[in-house]
Length: 192
Image 1 (cartoon, one colour):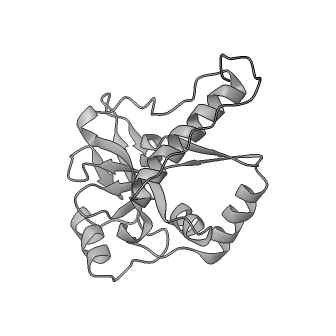
Image 2 (cartoon, helix red, strand yellow):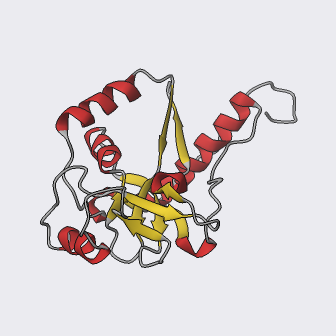
């Protein structure tokens, strides 16, 4: 509010030239609004004790630049959409991608939800997928024999794998295997 005592809100008008600039500004405004409404800090990050070199950054990416490596289950996508529709505050984990090729490592169903919602720019966590602490289908976790190279190759060639055919994990500094989704911060968007 202005100091002059009019009691009217102050408005700021900004022009942006690129959709990416708008998305960054919009996320910042949403975070500010969330903090103002809850009077609490917003949790953004992970509590997983992993090597810092596993995560290369969090950013906003155009949805068409992402390469899925496996198909989605339509019934599961519909259930996720129904679940999110009923939430008063929309909170979902960011999509995890390989930083080199933009291949989706985790979040295919969330990506489909974002696409159906008409989103053009989505939040992603870029991973150093070549890092030795990121594993695909380790013994006892998923179907054996699938390599990281095969995951990347299937996406780059456009020959997607069957739904849920990969299970990625990350090794903590203590040696424990954790589901890779622990690296995805929760992204919130306020409804209404």
